Length: 146
Image (cartoon, rainbow, N blue to C red; front, side):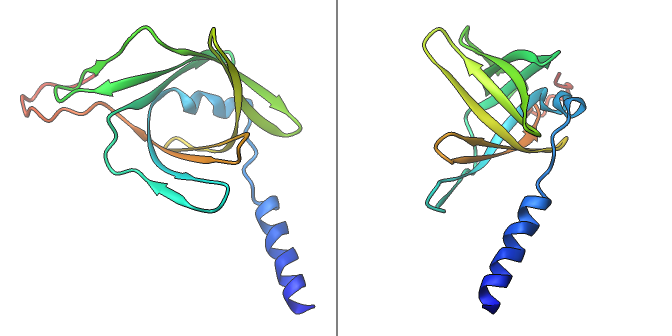
């Protein structure tokens, strides 16, 4: 009985402490994000050290794009014409990113969003943990990257 009470209390604690994403928070998504870790449904984690690609979000008035970009040593990014349309949707005190391309549509729930961290949950119960990042300049030429 004691174990059941502890389990119920713990479950209630995590549900009650879940961040509520507000419309004003969405602007924090804009910019470059690097994936740190993926947690799969079975509880296994995949850690990422160095990433060759970043996700770039640009959202205004709850609509925008997500694009994969490749950072270069001089602080620039390699990009192509591929992108996903993104629409932010609020339902039942939850926030979702609805993606679409000419080939498919899917959604991810925003679990946590701060200026430095983004956590997304997809339909397969896979959790993606991102950290905010910026351009990298390893050339040491003293130039400021944009």
